[in-house]
Amino acid sequence: MYRCIELARKGAGYTAPNPMVGAVLVQDDRIIGEGWHQRYGEAHAEVNAIAIGQAALSGQTYSNLIAYVSLEPCAHHGKTPPCADLIIRTGIPKVVIGCRDPFEAVNGKGIEKLRAAGIEVIEGVLEDECRELNKRFFTFHEKKRPYVILKWAQTADGFIARPRPKEGISGDRQNERLLISNEYSNRLVHRWRSEEAAILVGTNTALQDDPALTNRLWPGPSPVRLVVDMELRLPLSLQIFNGEQKTIVFNAIKEEEKQNLVYYRLEKNKSLISQLLSALHQLNIQSVLVEGGARLLQSFIDTGLWDEARVIRNTGMKTGNGLAAPDLEKGRLEETLQLEQDEVQTWRNAG
Image (cartoon, helix red, strand yellow):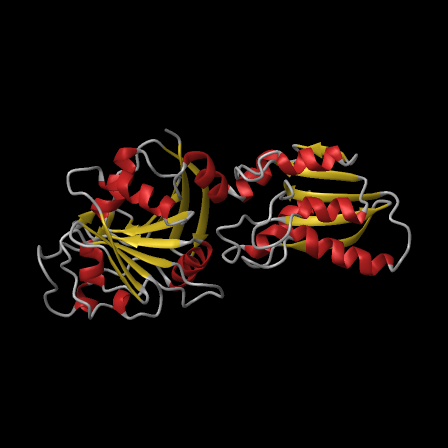
């Protein structure tokens, strides 16, 4: 099962909205086939593992075969046929499953189908690890919202930016911007972007920093770009409107869609964060990386609607003043990574 999890991770960033899944086919304590779900819409892990296993057996007996899979085999027709049916047709007598699939079209039905066909099924092996592997998928289907990751960089004395003007950009934006994280942390951030379905910023961050919000420093796809612009103040000259990647603008004025630009209307007199998460669930976006600004990040923290926070702290930089970093309440520090002067902290919501 550890090998299944290891294989499944190879699909990070490519399988959503499907989960990452790994499968291993064993005969007489020897692995004869293994595979993972490589890309959304393509063959599932079980299909790939069984294909390799059949080639290895080359017509030999299928006795003593055991299939290990990190997530319950599907039992419905989606982009591909049911994996449970393939396992039954192949004649595999025993299946070991990491955890059940929470998707309502599966959720126990794959296990029931296997057992009804006389296959021995063992479930719950490394269940916690398998659920952690697909925390985005489980959060989306069980909590009916995307998995929320907050991200920011701060100085050693707790600031994320220099003081900013109230409106517009004054002077040379690049000279005014406070660059906190180093090149290694920046590359890590782009890896994070490649692993999430969407990336979100607020109006001021889009206006002041003019970020591209794409993945350029790491192999893999770029996320869907999300921006909150309730009054539609952002000029179309900003990089997020360059058409290179789908962009969704959450606003209070209009709904419209043209090519890679979508305007999604929200209500002014309702909770912004709740509306955002509901909209993302409706749009089938399973995870979101929130990169700023401070007010938007704090709004997620204050409502308790977040799952992880990734804080890059430059231990060698102090500014003495500026825009204060968000106040991370009810956070539990789980991991720390040192990249030269940058301390990368991973927090979990303990609320």
